[in-house]
Amino acid sequence: MGWLPLTVLLAQGGGKVNASRRIIAEAIAQRKIESTGQAEFEAWAERFAGERVPALVSLAGAPLSIVSAYWRTDNARVDVTEILQDKVKDGKLEMKATNEAFGNDPEYGKTKRLEVEFVSHGIVGSATFAEESTVDLPPPRPASVAPVS
Image (cartoon, rainbow, N blue to C red; front, side, top):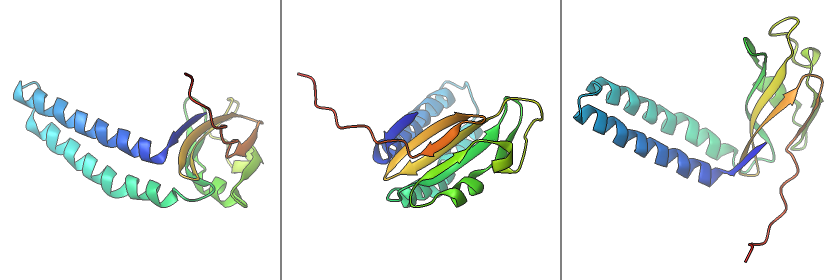
C-alpha cells in the first residue's frame, strides 16, 4: 500500500511536468519530434492542472474520499468508484470485495481484484484487494518514526 503526502505528490507531479517539458523541447530542437508533440503535451498538462489537481486538493481534509476504484481482471474492468464512495461511513470503508458487492462480474470465471486510489486526511494512498478479501480503508496511519542518528 502506497502512502504519500498530498503536497509532496503535487510537487512531484509539477516537477515531472517541467522535466517532460524540457525533454520535449530538446527533442524538438534536435528534430526528433514535431512541434505538434509539444502542443499536445502542453494541452494535457493544462487539463491535468485544471482538473485533477483541484480535485485532489478539495479532498485533502476528508477522512476518506475514493478517487478511483476498479473491480477488474487482467483483461476487463468495471468502474466502481461511486459504489465505494457511497459505502464510506464515518470516514471508513469496510466491506468484502465480491461480484455481489459491486453488482457486476467484469469477466466470468476469472479471478478479480479491487484497485483503489483514495485520499485520507491529506494523504494519497492506493490499495489492491483480492477477490473475497475484506476491504478496510483507510489503513492504520503509520507511527511516527524518530530519525536514526
